[in-house]
Image (cartoon, rainbow, N blue to C red; front, top):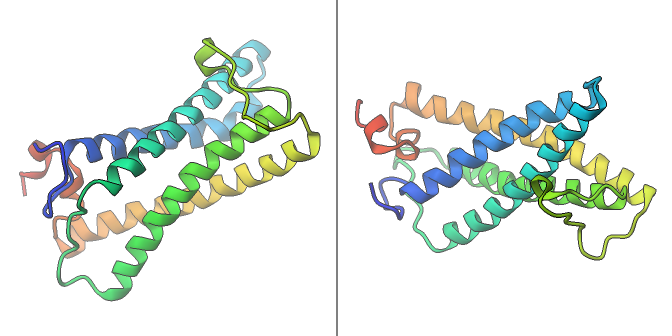
Length: 187
């Protein structure tokens, strides 16, 4: 397996970023919707700390991923892919990148403005630079954070549905090129 992308498939570093961020984001979305209803204060505080810390990790990984994407080729889309699908692919990917930067940024701003800055896995506190404690700003950032969560869910549904469509209906390599080579060679 190549570390770098080729015109036929994603390299192991791109695949690693994709699947690690996917796993973390799906876990964060699920946890985010339930963490406020945890009755035990100590457990809820730990879950919030993990949520904030993991959000910062996602932000860092997305920054690295964008740098990696900029320095790599992108595998080509199958030649029979209609123009509207190509436009949709680029739009969904672009919006996923934007929202996966915006969600952790808005969460970080919200926490700092609420005077509850994240403690990165309880190692050190990391307030957002230049953000004052402000109830108004915290509420605005919270609204943005929740809105982006719903947008990410919608984009993920489209992204997953498109991958399934390519794999099962079109029977092309679009899904397989993001899987490790030992998983994608069975077809």
